[in-house]
Length: 605
Image (cartoon, rainbow, N blue to C red; front, side):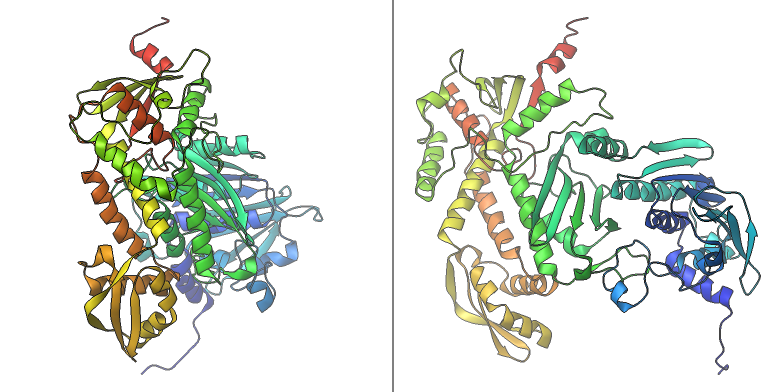
């Protein structure tokens, strides 16, 4: 076997570069983070050939002292941390001290910088097998310019893995956009092959932030976004989440930042997915730009070389905080809010830079008549009557005033009043802003479903003993987790006991899940407990059953409704959570404004 020997510095840095420098986008991420850490308020980025030929980043940050320039190109040299205590509460984006050394080992890199104290600028570059740093004077204003040329020129095997110029630039642009969303107070300018791609001025208030958001994510996102800002227990969550009807075929518009650092975390992804669970169409992904702020000492950012992942000291608290607030935000959206947003959209021009979405706060609708536990059975019976063949059947809980058109001085409710029924499928209604079209079955399905969930929550989850208790073989770790989680199992209507070092016995299940696959269900719930500290799989299974029941118990197509019945349905929609989508995530109603109708008929021309 060959003798052990030390690697030369260039080879060691090239090995390290394999973790940090994957493509031009990786270089841009590391260099932009350095500029932000340096306190820059303006960053100019110029690239050529997708970033493979040239990447030049110039900032107006604090700069680097002449004596520190050689160290800046060395591995494990940084100004951002000093000891273990600093590492446990990192406030900067960078802290490893590897980026510049790694980049300079696989590309031609020069760094020019000046500080307020220096009389002129200085430039450093690394050359030779030992990567000796060479420093020479160079004119430069306060700040730093980093220029990288010919990425992977000395590692042709790595260069072969690069994609087309268009693909590489697409990845690079995505990094710039994400960092532009992380720091609204910094101006970003991006040029590709001498063409301006992005010019984003600094944003100091919510209006300017939404302008940047519109330019980065597109005006359609902002038009369909809900603003959230909430704080509790040392955690602050703010940002924008899209309505369920603005979903994506892939998870390409999901931006999450922890203390300004862009991350991809499966715990957070699970919390968001859980909040959208029964309002998102199957196979679709939510869109959001969210910011979580918390004490840096309770989040570990030293988890992965690319710093894309973090680890929370109390992951369960973070998960529940995000889930509860997003779930509540989506539930509180009423037709009134969406109608008002539609009105705002027709008034604000131009679309690309105007904030299309009024912030939605957690407030009840003025038309809301929440049902109490004692009313649920009566309401369900009333909707059962709605399905009968009697042409005048009406919900028992709706008053005659709710079904009659308003007097001239009376305020028109958000969904207005019914005009007619189209093909036995849609309600056509008139409100203050124009025409409302409602999918009868989808709307009634959501109303019935929400009332069934209310009844379930008020009565708790009923369970029943298994005639023959089921024994499951599990790992020792799973058995210990089940033993510690017995109370949480009980809250879900399950009784699961430890029967040995690697065995569990299931004695009770929820009544509605008596015919389910017990083995798989218990294992899935247990996996959630171990991964996230909680589980919603039981409730998800029960909700699926309730959704199916609601679907079969809702008004079917071609059922002729009277005007009072249609108005009764509209009023219930205004008082029902998540009424904008059916149980499967499809929209239940749309608003067509008068300006849109005028365009159709060329009025005013």
